[in-house]
Length: 113
Image (cartoon, rainbow, N blue to C red; front, side, top):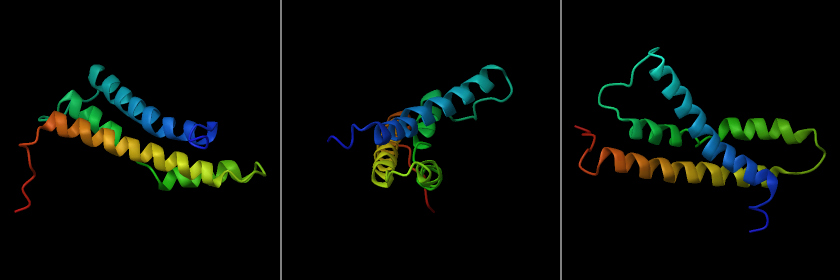
C-alpha cells in the first residue's frame, strides 16, 4: 500500500483518472457552449462525460512519456511509473464503463448483425 501512495504512482494515476476526464470534458463543454460545435444527436452530457472518463486509459503515451521523464533522474522509478499507469487506466476504464452503462441504459445494445 505504501508504494501505491508514493507521489509518483499517485500523481500519474490521478493525472490519468482525473486530469484526462476533466480536461477532455471541459474542453468539449467549452466549445459546445461557445457554439463552435454541437453535441452530436443521440448523445447526452452524461455519455460524453463517460467517454471522456474512458480517455484516461492510456498505456502507450504514458509509458513513453514516463520513460523519457525518469530516464534522466538517475533513479529507477520504472515500477512506480507503471504502477501509476495501471491504476489510473484501470480506474478510468471501470469508472467510464459504469458511467456509460448508467447513461445509455442496459436496454441499448449495439446490434452486430
